[in-house]
Structures are given as structure tokens and as C-alpha cells.
Length: 626
Image (cartoon, helix red, strand yellow):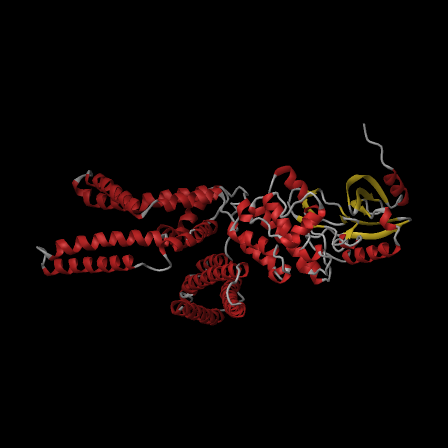
């Protein structure tokens, strides 16, 4: 049996009759009541948020609410619920906003538990974008909390509501008879003290939202609102890393920086926070399962295993060749050897490529998966084996080259009785140690396979597989590629499709593309290192002589920020050079470009690559000096 509508529902419906047809109540809180209604003229669903009548009767508050609501109605952003109208009807003051099918962040966490790191990072970044836009328009939210963040059904998109309004209802940071009008769990210390608030107060609240989204707990809890406010002002929350062990360090750092007591220690702009969250999300992008399995299986086939496989296959196929009639024995043996070394392995790789194509993944997706696999393991390899070759690696490399070289020379000169039997085994054994160490430090297997699939052989294998495989099933392909890699692969494809004579004139294109890709990748990695360093510095504490430490701290931050600007500029230049080459290749295909203009761009691209090399060399010299 349907519950009878309350008196407020009936009176409000009577006041807006002919304009809105109210269906049901959606929620009720300190801001009043929210109803689902149909806007009669446009025949669309809207949410009507009604200011509590007891507050609407106060002329000053009523006017201020209308003024702020009309300001918020001017905001237009993909992650802000738009306000269609701000109006009065008799004693009622309300605004109509877009109806979003979904629930609040509070409802989502209460029903299904904390969000995953990837979902939480994406949500926080979308809210940060919304805050950045509002702050640029001079609107401070004043009541950022999970109840004011809607999650759209189907897309999961985060939308923020109540911009600039909640804080106007009796002042969200004031005490009234011991009660707090607002949400103490998400108030910044300055807001809890009744002081002036700015954009950084919203970011504190967003940090508390992130804490809640990741852990399911509030940073501070208490039996009374005054107890929570006191903790907001005087205490530090339990480290988020102790509650969430699966979140990336950058995401945890971004949330905890927002919760700094002093506004100057938080991110100063919502744009800065969104950028930090973007970096955290970049690390969380995952390779689809088919590609992940392919890369893992491929890289687990070590060099020694591959050599044993080829050796055994060679013996078998050669024996089959010698089983042929005497007149055809030599040809059969060579054919069997070629088949064992080339045809069979290539056939197996074609079958693997065909399987990926059937699943909707192409060569570019596979290359991106290999590149990401290398990048994900880079930090662990650096931690365990260092950035460069160790003394052991350098010594074994010298012994390998010297041993084999001396042994071959001794054999050529006829010194086989003493020198060669000693030198060659030493060289081979040292070489095995050296290659094993090199494999662990650089992941040589993955690099070799990446080179194979990026090269002409990989292109040829996928081309054959494409003729054997049916059309793609429509499954979304893996698109999480670094921009430079996507541009480089697209340019290589365009270059390969040019006429042979044109390719001959532009034969330096592949080399320039590879160099620009590598340079952009190095700049991107350096940028990650600098962002990590700056995050650690901002998140750390200084001790000792205050003035001296502060001066050194400021100088280090200034130097790192200057280097970051240089690296960002070089990364931008390398990517721009790749884009220019791609566009010129497209023009050549369209018949509107010329080889000469592309040659000029290649010269400029080489200069950009040389600037990157000089920048990296200067950084290495500084680090070595330090």
C-alpha cells in the first residue's frame, strides 16, 4: 500500500502545479527536501531541491540563497549537475536541476564497501575538475561531501551538486546552539573555526571524501559534532596507507596532502590535484587479460630455453634431411634446417598473432602491452640492480669479450694446445654470467621481443595472421598507449605504405621515429621521477635550524620545478616532432605534401632529439657530481 504524501509534499505540489508534476521524494537533509518531478513544458525529469520553509521565511537568508543559487546555475561542466532554474512559488524557494539516475557516493560505499583505487582515483579527479572549473568562476562549494557527489548509473560518472549553496544556509561553518549546520566530518580546520574559506578548503573536504571512498571510514569520528570539529582542528588522521594497502603511493599521497591542517601545505589549486591524481591513475592502467597473458608467457621463455629449443629442433630437422635419398640429402638437410630455425617458430608466432586478432587486438596493442610491462618492472629492477651496470657485470663483460677474442685468435694462430682451451671456456662462462645479469637488470627478453614485434618481422607476422583471421569481433582494443608510441607506430605504418622510391629518399624516417619515441619515453620517465621527488618533499617534514632548512628546502623545490618545466617542454617538443612527421606522411599519401618539406621536418626533429640528449647528459653530470 502506497504511503500517503505528507503535508509539505501536498502544499509544494499545489504551489508549482502546471509547471512541475512531483512524483516522489528522493531525499531529505539539512538543505531541505529533494523531489523527483516532471517539468511539464519540456516533458523531462528534474530534481527539485526545496529550501526548508523555516529558513525561507527569513528575508536575508532567502535573498542570499537565491543569489548564490543563481550564481551556481551559471556553472556548466560535465561533472557538475546543471541547475535549470532558481525560482520562488509563494512561501517556497527551490531550484530545479537535472535528474541523475544513480546514487550518492555515500550510498555506494555503504552498500558495496570502499571503492577500488582505480575507481576512487577517477572519481576524485572528476570532482577536482569540477571544483577547478567552479573556483575559476569564483564559486566555492563549502560543503564537498559524499552526499553531494552523485554516481551516474551505467557510466559511473561523478557529478557534484549544491555548488555554492549549502554554505549559504545559516553558514556551514558556524555553531548554532551547539549544533553544526553542515557536515563536520568534511570541514577544513579553518571552516570549523568559523574563519574565511577559499578553494583550498574545498580541497581539504575532497581529501576527506577520498579518505572515505578508499577506506570506508571518516578521517575523524566522534559522538558529537563538536568532538569531530575539535579533532579536525587539532589532530592528524590515521595514515591512509595503514587502512588501504592496495592503493598506489601517489594516490595516497595526494589524498593525505589535501588533509594538511595548514592551507599552504595543501595543493593550491584543484587543477594541481587533478594532475597528481592523473599521474596516479596512469600507473593503474591495466593491460587486458589476453595481452597480459601473451606478454607474460613470451617473456618467461628465457634466452637459454629458446636456444635449447632451437638446438633440439635443428638436430631433429637435420636428421630428417639426412634420411632423404643420397642425391637430395644436402638440399633436404638445408631445407629441414631452415624449416626448424625459421618456418616453425614463425608459424607459431603467426598463430599467436591470429589469436590476438580474433580477440580484437592488433599489433599496436601488443607493442603497447610490452612497453607497459617493461615500465611496470622498471622501478623494481632499479631498486634491486641499480640504474647502471655493476662492477660484477662490467668485469664479466670484459672477461667474456677478452676470453672469446683471445681464444679465437689463439685458434687462428695455432696455439690450440694451451691458450685456446683455457681462454674460450673462461670467455663463454663469463659471457653467461654477464648475459644473465644483463637480463635481470634490463629485462633483456622483453626488450628483444618488443623489438621483434615493433620491427618488420612483427609487421609481417601480423599481416599474414590478418589474412588467416576473420574480421575483428568488435571487442574494444587496448588503447592505453603512450602518445609517442601511438604516433610512432602510426608514422611507421604510413612510411611502409609509401612507394619504394619515396621510401628510399626518406630512408632516415624509421631511425628518427625510433629516436623520438625513445627520447619522449625517457622524458616521461624523468617527469615521473621529478613528480615523485616533489611529492615526497611536499609531504615530508623539515627539522633542525628552521631558517637554514627552509632556505635549502625552497632551493631544492625551485631546482626540481625548474627541471620539471624543462623536461615537460622537451617531452612536448618530441611529441610535436612525431606529430609533424605523421601529418607530413599523411600529406604525402594525399598528394598534397612533398619529400622536401618532410626532409626539413626530419632535420628539425633530429635537433629536438639532440636537445633531449644534452638535457639528459647535463642531468647525469649533476647527479654524478652530487
